[in-house]
Length: 283
Image (cartoon, rainbow, N blue to C red; front, side, top):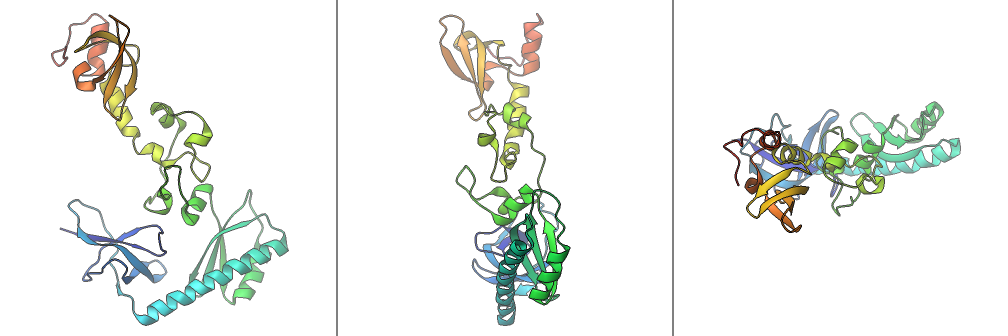
């Protein structure tokens, strides 16, 4: 059975999952996490645990961080801070419409990467030359999208928790307004947009449940039979797996469990068209 732990390069930052290998690190320990630029010092935020399902191929921790590794990480952190200050100063001097979102520095190759956002494409060739001379090393500039900026800078969502993209999301999956409509959410952009200004990624989390419920439940307006009598569906309560029905006898509404109302939407469609009631229907 495989083991897995989680590390973060910054306190309260995004989680990266790894195979602990021969290590048994505890929360707060400094370890070496393999990256494309070499091993980086990271802090363990989730100790090794056995996982009962297949999680795919995970990077294996290179070992515990030594004093020189931690010193090199502190030097890189200082270089990142200096590069951020220098980049902001030079951007003002060059009069470029850019906003610095983050800075990364790889000590092994002496390469500094500046991440920025801008309303359009920017000619930053002169900026790169001046910044390279200031930092005495190679400098790369990379423009970010709105979602990538939110992932890099982090923040708090409308739910009161840290942004999903800055903690555990690996890839951005397509999100549409249709998902919000299927979940009976208001079409107000202020209510369904995230910190990046785009549709919230979490709209996709529960959407499959709403699709499954819609496939199994009678549609709004359909006539159904419930333990309380015959009525017409007025709305769905997906989190509670209930169908709200307005009774034909007295006009009152009753929330009924889905299992007590119908077997499937196809069964109700067949019944409404005059077909025989399927065996799986309950009265």
